[in-house]
Image 1 (cartoon, helix red, strand yellow):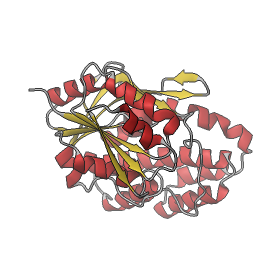
Image 2 (spheres, helix red, strand yellow):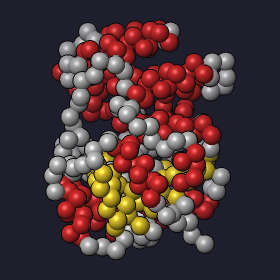
Image 3 (cartoon, helix red, strand yellow):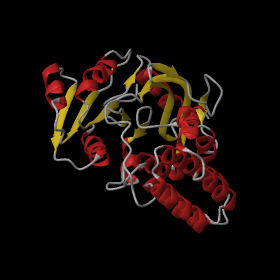
Image 4 (cartoon, helix red, strand yellow):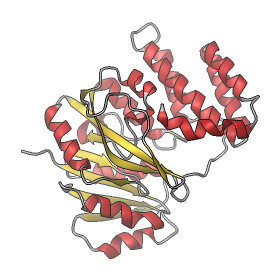
Length: 308
C-alpha cells in the first residue's frame, strides 16, 4: 500500500503566486491525499483565489495572522495523511515530487523526515545549488548536521516531508521564532529520528517572489542560530558537537554576509556576540572581517550562498 501524503501550504499575501503553486501540486504524476492551504490572515485576495478553484482536493483554512509556523502547525494537525509534504505559497513542484517522496518513504521506513533537491529561480535565471550528495543518491542521511552544513540545499520548507506523528512529537514548528523556525523543526526531528534524502530536483525555490526579498532588521540573532547555540551547549563532549558546530558556523557566516550586504550591521553584530560567547574564534575573525568590507563587495555572498 502506498503511503498517504497530505500537502500543507501556509499562505500570507502571496496572491500573485498561489494559483501557480497549486497548479504544480494538481499536476503531480501521483496526487496527494489532500491539499491544505492555511491562510494566515492575508490582506490580499490570495484566499479568494484558492476558493475560486473549487477543487475537491483543496481545503482552505482561515485564521488570524499568527505567523507561518502557526499556519503550518494548523495544517499539520488537520492533515489526514500519515505523512505531510510542505510547500511555500510562492514556490512550486515539478510533477515528480510526490512520486519521489513516496519512493523514499517506502524504501526507508525508519525515517521520519524526507527531502529532495530544488532549484533556485532568481533574477530570471535558474540556479542549481550545491548538493550534499551525488546526483541521484537515495538513502538515509549519515550525519544530518554535517551534510546540511556542506549543502544547505539538503532540506527546506518546499522539499520537506515529515511523518505526522513524529513531527507532532517534537512540537511541530516553533511559534514566535524569528528567522529559521523550519530549521529548528528539522533539527529536532533529526535528533530523534532517521532522515532520508533523494538527490533529485523536484522543486523550485522562487527567490523573486513578492515579500521574499524583504529583510527585517533585528536587534538579536536569528532564532535558528540561538537554538543551535543552545544545542551546542547541550551536546558538549558528544560526537555531535563537531557537526552541529559546523552547521552553526555555516549558517552564521552566510547570514552575516547577507546582513552586511544590506547594511544591517546591528543584526550582524548580534551574531558576532553570540559567536564570541560560544568561543568560536575562527568564525569570530571571519565575521569581524565581513563587517569591514563594503556592502557592494559582498554581493557575491548573496549570489553564491546556495551553491555551496
